[in-house]
Length: 382
Image 1 (cartoon, rainbow, N blue to C red):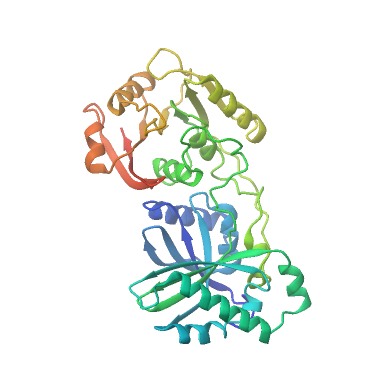
Image 2 (cartoon, one colour):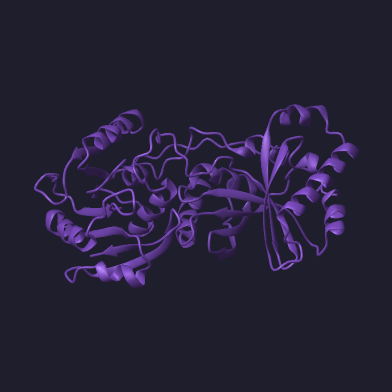
């Protein structure tokens, strides 16, 4: 590649939490025709634990940084070759046209190596830095590129598998799960992109409309905030592809924020937590979500509505929080809300998690995933 991306098609790797790759793919399938109706469909190249690799329109895929709520990063492939020794790596790396990819920015290398003779990450990083330094001495960047890169940093990912090297440039910058509304950290909050993925999975990959989505142990309200904003683009933040020479041919597209018809209700026993959620609701969501102090196991925390109820819940567990009896909680949810269905996180793999399901509920489907390093199951019950 001798210039910034100029072709209409690029290959990207979109990462997510391990176990949620199929949900990420479904979100891309759902949002692509909505936002890019004149663009040819993307092609799935690979689905593996931790992400998907796709090929498609460059402008559309870069702008998916704004649209995908279940993603963690979007990495753009820009170089690939086979190599089995460090001298050859040095020669090949110094021939990459770095001025047109990262300009003069400070490069942070993110390296993973498997089943390869090139496995020493410190030596790999030194070799790459030496090659980059030699390239820059031999090829001084144009003044415009120097100005664009002044004081900036970027991340280049190198994946080595069986002596095949794949270089990718981070187009996202900060992880995509970071949202504007996250002002404070409640005890053990669920990561935003995981919450978005589980909501989308619960909804059978389509928006929940004109039904009540209830979180009876809502904590900071992440599930409800993600459900209410699932259709809206992330307009508040910057993305790395706006700042790198590789992407100079492209600009961020402005998308219309879609309104949601979902009715969201959140309950928690902590007055402080509900007050914080209400503040976030007022600052970012125009008070579209209704929060109330309420205990799942008491008469408080009910709603008066003729609409069907759908439950989504991440009950307390772990060392920092008092663990909830999952079976007891599910029975209380069933009795109190008479829901159409329940989406419930249990912090175990399915083989163990299924033991906590009451006989009065039927398993519709389940999804095993990693939640903060904990092997967990999201089960949908009816």
